[in-house]
Amino acid sequence: MIEFQLDRRSGVSTYLQLVHQVRQALRLGTLRPGDQLPTAREVVERLAINPNTVLRAYREVEREGLVEGRPGMGTFVRRGIAGPTLAEHTRLRRGLEEWVREARAAGLDHDDLRALFTVVLADAAKEGAA
Image 1 (cartoon, rainbow, N blue to C red):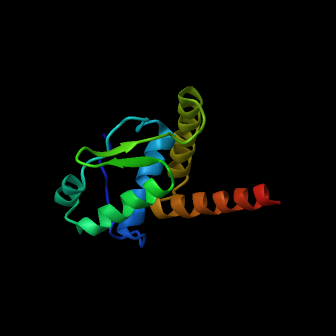
Image 2 (cartoon, rainbow, N blue to C red; image 1 turned 90 degrees about the horizontal axis):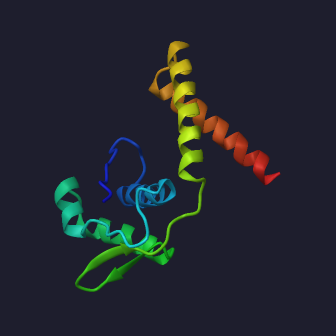
C-alpha cells in the first residue's frame, strides 16, 4: 500500500502531491491493478489534512481512469502506467544514483541537484517536442 508523504515547503498543492505520488507509484510498479489506496480517513489522520483534499486527489486519478471507487469498499487501482520494465528501471536508477554520488563529490547540495536535474529534464522535453 502507498504511504503518502507531504512536502509543505514544495509550493505544490497538497492534492497535487497526492496525485503525483499515485502516478509515480503506478509508474514504478509499487501500486498494481487491484491494489487498494488508503481510505480518505486514513490519509487524513496520517497527514492531518482536510478530507476534501484527499477526495479531490482521488477524484482526479479516478477521472484519469487509473483508479475506481467502490462504494463501501474503498478506492482500487484499475490500471498501471506503462513504463520501463522493472529490470530496466533498476538499471536506470543505479545510473542516477551514481550520478548523484558524483555530483555530491563535486560539491553540489540538494538544491543544486534539483536545479540541475530540472534544467536537464526541461531541455530533454524541448528536444522531444522538436
